[in-house]
Length: 118
Image (cartoon, rainbow, N blue to C red; front, side, top):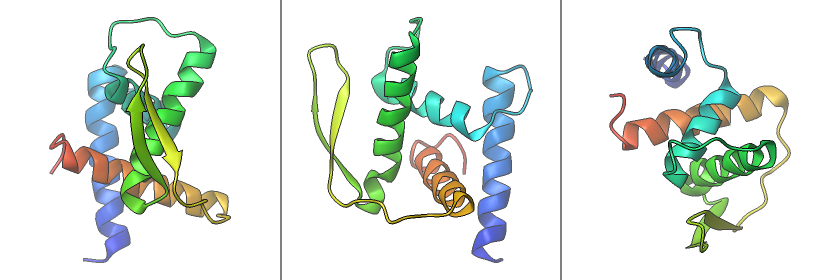
């Protein structure tokens, strides 16, 4: 089976599973899933986040998701428990579609690693 077909199937399975767990079945969009990864990585689940904190959660998620690709490296946790990453390599310019595919691939890899999907 082609790599793109496998990714598409895994992505659809992940969206379905996360949507049923977190949004009463309404399909979650890419940004919402990135946000969930950020909350997972921070580990502070039962907290209301302000707008700037939500943006920071998405940044944490993107760093964590792109870490296996060599773009970021974990540095430390600050006194509030927030993870910090440093840039190892600048992302190359990508078209919107290419960004989307990269993020979906990274998210699927993350949830495979966490054994949330198979």
